[in-house]
Image (cartoon, rainbow, N blue to C red; front, side):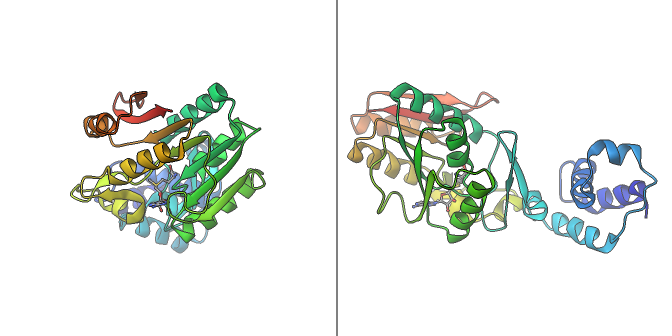
Length: 270
Ligand SMILES: C[S@@+](CC[C@H](N)C(=O)[O-])C[C@H]1O[C@@H](n2cnc3c(N)ncnc32)[C@H](O)[C@@H]1O
């Protein structure tokens, strides 16, 4: 089959399950052939080999497997990270949390950072790359996440500056100067798209309201006396977090928005 025919057939297989079937067919074929979009556009008569293996990928996607689990890669902060099933694929808005963390490191001239819920490791790894003087402790309760984060740290040559811990919150980890987290913050009541539900639920759901883990992290940061805490949160959690800060006499806080203008996180300074 030629590229033209393969693209047409795979877009049709994807049409009922994804929003942009043509685009996703292109992404899958580009990854399968290890070529770029320009090659696909310029060689539509090129014969595709091992077509059954490729259509197996398309079938998985049509059955709502996240694209990143099929291609085993994800782009974050313009870098290509390794991705594996069982670990949450990072979202573009989390790049802002990396910037906020690096700003805090500079402001406080910090050398010790910790991250709760590292997942694929993208926040800690990007922070280590952008702030070369720091040491990071990164935790996760998922063994698959910790293993993947270690692989990614090796890929980017920062494995000697990030210590990964299979633990909850910061159990067994020394108190950091700066704490960062993009914890699970979705309410159990929220209805999610099928492909999102194929990602690990311990990475998605933060409790009945969704903000329970965020609140635990805020209290932990206060107890440990960190210089600053930066967290991502849900677009509709600003009011509940604000009352929580006020109820707990936390005064020096601010919220930030993502590129769509939605409330997306907060920073607390000690
Ligand atoms: C929303 S994901 C974020 C992953 C990654 N930091 C990112 O931004 O793409 C949340 C992560 O927190 C982990 N997690 C959930 N509860 C945790 C806990 N009590 N302590 C440490 N990590 C936890 C999950 O396994 C998951 O990897």
